[in-house]
Image (cartoon, one colour):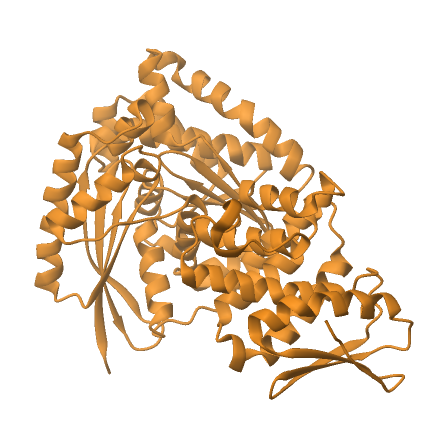
Length: 521
């Protein structure tokens, strides 16, 4: 049985962490070492906007040490990621380049949605405990240095996810800057948090009942695991037990807490902020149980790597969560559910039939499905400039699991579906895209445009659609007895760009009337 060793590295807001994992056989992932070095990068970024040279030197020294440990373990692969402290720094690109030149380790910067998705996967790595809890009405509270992410689940399905700038290091910077006395800290945290949480409840929570709150953080989660006997799957505290834990952090001095809970003294104030946030959010939701499994971003990175090399196969459908995010965005902007489902079905059918021609894969199909779901969200703002307003909405709204670049691809597909395709980045249309991304956007736009024409009346006239690729023709057979004069007209207009991109002629056939028509330019 083959065994692989893998290193997951996170350059976080408060510390640098590396975990070494061993994969042996299907669904066997074991942590064999964890090394952490405290380095409060967030104090630079959140206060001054940049990472200073002294902190950069310390990052490089630590990563060189990590490289030596990886070599000693004979790690076959590694992934190294930076979070908000690097992401929000003005000199982020310079920092990344210096790290690569001086250590040989390349740091990729995670967007917020990518980071939260990996954190989400880290909880999924706990297997049965995760599956059992997520089946009920559950919220995941992901507490980071710069922000928190609240994701709501119902029956194993993601309902909504939202980011709030209430990270523990960001709050601590305000406490220091405003010279808040210890006796007033909890009140200060309350005022900062509740101003945003009240709006969150009004917009997303409403009267929704939440039974379980899953907390992901690097402060209280490890302590909760210790308090419950060291088993992450059983690190579940009821509200009374959690409040007792918070009260200990509230009343004892940092030295006492550090000694009794076995944690570094410098982490105690951050654990207090994290605990107060978790408690207030649990109160807001009415959650009866708090599960703090003690996982970190490193666990999610390892889980995703194991999935990619096919040594781990989780039961949870994460792609379904990404699609659910898009569906909820569409709903928020009054999109038609039936229209989106129809368009998603048509685009998927055409995409699958054109595999030999377009050369795209499963991930690109996801972009197309998301574009179909969000194709008209801009109508909420403007019935005229639908493409531009849809682009703005998509770019301003997080879709968990997509990077910024991927979200921009989806936004451009929707934009060009409604407006003129802008070639070669002229007039700012595809600015910033490399050649590969540009071609993907063009191909997926062509498919979405053609599909959109087949339901131009928005009446979902088709009972079914079949697509067959024959040499240089794409034969589309639609099952309907209704009058499709409007659809035929718009289909004819939308074939030109499709032919240009694929050199394939779309042919439309109406099954019920045995009427075949080849669309000419």
